[in-house]
Image (cartoon, rainbow over all chains, first blue to last red; front, side, top):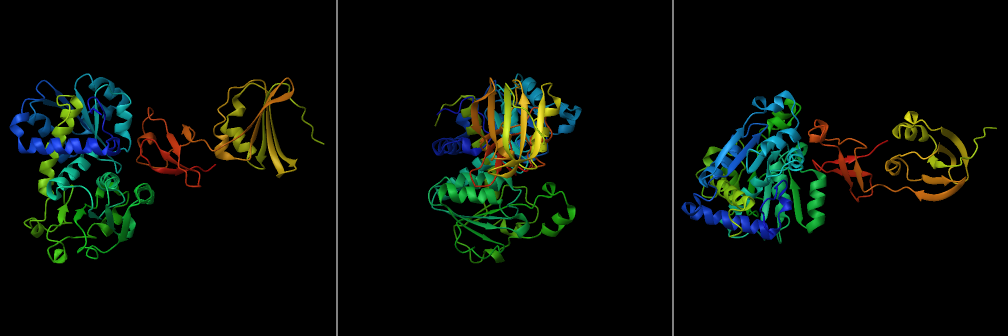
Length: 311
Length: 142
């Protein structure tokens, strides 16, 4: 099914075939970027960032500019009409006349879904609170595919804030749709994966899971270690954040029993959950992950805008 | 002895668990309608021991979806020409719009008037609903 004109609010809106199509196209653009330099000439991307996110915003902007399109938008709700109390519905009804595709980052969960109900152009969820971040999921999937050559039969460990971490939630739900996946959840007891999500993943796909508070316990068995930041902005209580912020710090010592082809990922930005000494380890792929994110967003937007039908 | 005569046309909400009648009266905003309404509390019942009953005279446009959330014992009798024209058992509604709020403080429905709360029943044996917007589960409590 064509992605032309479609919104992307939740990665589950994409079938496995569509995910494969986006990833394959993303890798094709990554390898031959010059072939795609003009495909979005005349197209405008609107970036509606109601909360700061330099990386995601710039990744989208870079993606559109690399395809010859242009970009407009705001990166701070205080400089937009949201500050004056304008509803999302009204903002969208105006701005979708100004752009061909809109990406929205919003601190409120469900805001991009609301936006999609009033938009005539495709809306991309650029992250809504602790809920979903589908293009980060695409970024993660393309990184896994690029490094492992497949997305199946893998044991994936998620470590850190699994309660509020929307990147984890989106990726977990999507990975669990692939064949023969196993998951290890490593978190402090206060930041465990939400029960409803765990139940959903187990029930829907009969997936094997393990929960632990120890980072090193399953290190020798895992194929992918997905580290996450303990996010200060998700806590209502500063004291609780301070107590938990240094729960896990990955260093070379902790990796001593890990597989040689372990894939270490992180959605970035990192604070101190991965020691800088890990950066030069060949297994650390988080900067490559950020780079591939631009190419997968190029693929997604090209398909949504209909400038490419499929790869 | 208390006596309330039968109605010729209207709605009788029967078999309400004793004590819940007033809540239902409030939830349905029955104090705001112009038709005659009677709330009977602690009436003798063969099946329940005691029950509450609400009788509403005349045709009144009411959203009775919430009754299934409040009390699944309830029977709704639609009265026409002094007789029961239709008898309905209430069920837990699968889809619910606007009847209660999402418990997630970060949900868009808590701040945006355009985002009316909307839920789907989760089939897990509890009265839990998944938010259409943020996907959090909210347990309905009267």
